[in-house]
Image (cartoon, rainbow, N blue to C red; front, side):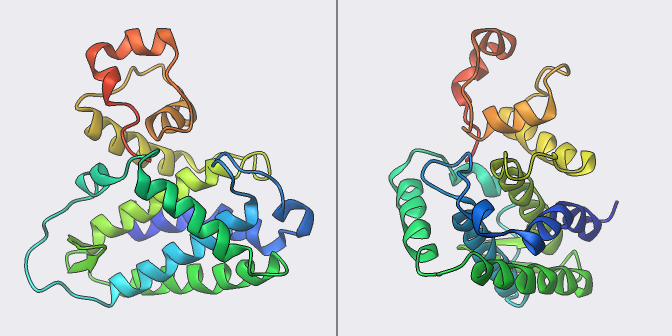
Length: 218
């Protein structure tokens, strides 16, 4: 599967959900503390806007980050992460209806897919102070879309596509330094790997000393 197809597979269920999201669903809590569905849609829009900027911002030098190392600096519970949660909640509250951020997201995400399809996957671009290939950028976008897809439960109960969850697993395995136990469910691994859930005693025993690395990013 080409990376742009992976991104499309990650975006497709989000686009379908946001197309019909209503006010009641918009106030549904997500798995992110303090965020409702409308807050998460606003965040997804912001990430899409960042993607569009990145795809149009060539780097001046070689890549210094790949699709795995990009996530190393992102940790839940840090002051920066908490500030981001609060900031998004404040900005999203300016909309009187969930359809405002929803329409922005639909427009932005569709534009990202078009731009991604036209981009050379080997081109090095810039985002958030990093230089990485378009291929790596699209992989990070697919992983983030999958994690936030899971955050939308229970409003969006269907999980991401298997190929997208496979990309999340590959990313988490690389950050962990070894494959997680094969019997771990992909959705459960995504949640404990990103700090949405805590490891159980059995899960800690299964990964041994590497358990202290969790969450791997968030």
